[in-house]
Amino acid sequence: MGDEQQLSTFNFQLSTHRRIHFIGVGGIGMSALAHVLLDAGVKVSGSDAHASRLTEELAARRMRFSEGQRAENIAIMQPDLVVISAAVKEDNPELAAARAAGLPIIKRAELLGQIMNRGKGIAVAGTHGKTTTSSMIAYLMSAAGADPTFLLGGVPQNLGRNGRLGKGEYIVAEADEYDGSFLKLRPYISVITNIEADHLDFYADMKAIRAAFLEYAQNTGSGGALLICADQAEAARLMAGLQATPHEYRLVSYGFAAGASWRVADDGPNDAGGSNYRLWHDGAYLGDFRLKVPGTHNVQNACAAIAACAYAGIEADAAAALLADFRGTERRLQVKGELSGVTVVDSYAHHPTEIATDLRAARRSYGNRRIVALFQPHTYSRTRSLLPAFATAFTDADEVLISDIYAAREQDRGDIHAEDIVKASDHPAMRYVGSLDEAECYLTAALRRGDVLLTMGAGDVWQAGEKIVLSEKQLANS
Image (cartoon, rainbow, N blue to C red):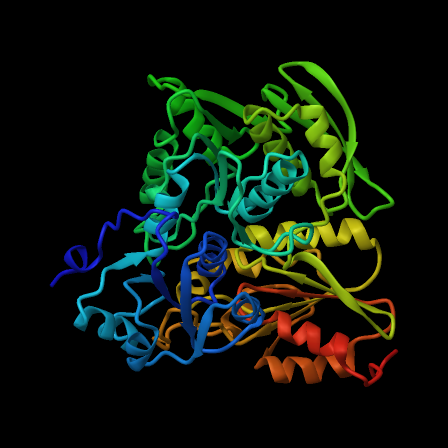
């Protein structure tokens, strides 16, 4: 049978207590869904190659978890629905066993869409910024008493987990463009933060990416609102095209641009480690506000979150005041700790634009302190397709260490290597360090008091930073 025959369009109802099994439950998007289903009283099981904090938290909530993916897990867990993500390969033994047993199989994006379409969805899409922006929205709506359901691509530090079933009418979700996943959503309020080339293992070219974002935009519900950042060229281009065509939703711009409907002005860093900013809506000044999270880009994200919440009935000035207490999302410029005078910060940045943005934010926060970036490239296809941009992304780092590529869902074809970034770059202090263990050894000898270590990447590079923070050894040059 073909994929379309094997994957069931399952008419999922949260009120129905079923046995649902997640293959790859340790993924950030899959774990969010598992949390929501557990909240709903569904019997949930899951497996992954390795246990993690995410799977341990789910197991503590009575999810049956198997470390390792084996065909017999299907017979043991006895699910009547199996959920898979785009990362699950065709030769996965549990997937094969589920098919052999005739079980309905649904993709993560389909299940997310079915949950979102139960209520009024608020979805945030974009090449960058969607996790933080959707986390801000979920936090604001929770703090304002709206009690939303949320399914996020990160763990907001204020909320403690990435998925929760609320009692309110709104459902907040990160809309992932990989594999066309976000096209399953029909949100009432949509946000597009920016549009850039990425996931070129799935999209043929920039034309295909533009087409996907256009379709996502046009899926915004009648009477709802579509918010698009006015500061980024591709997003502004999309908005101009939409303005010229009939639509049944409000089309709204936001950002730093002078003509934006929701406009912010960055007033610089503050003593909380974030930024002070001013906010306007349609020319009306709403006040001076502050953030704890660092970087100009987070002022922009805050503008989107405040505007989205305004269309969900939360007063903008009240939302902006609440956002002052937002502590950020795990792995998004998250301070992990300090050892021997070295501050360790973790960043999920894995695209050249994200790397440059986070390093710029770190430079703004830490001034003249020496910034050492340890970057783990994520996937061979991204490293290959964006190599020239990676080579120039590290300007604000004083020293750059490149570790081996994190393969994720891909196989090494032998035509790209992490060291190719070093060869393509003219950064005066960039070097290839090999494995993360080798990187940790190098850093233990090279870091000195006053340094800022920034671990960067979407793989497991964060572990190197945590090992350094937890180490009982003093750093050699402290």
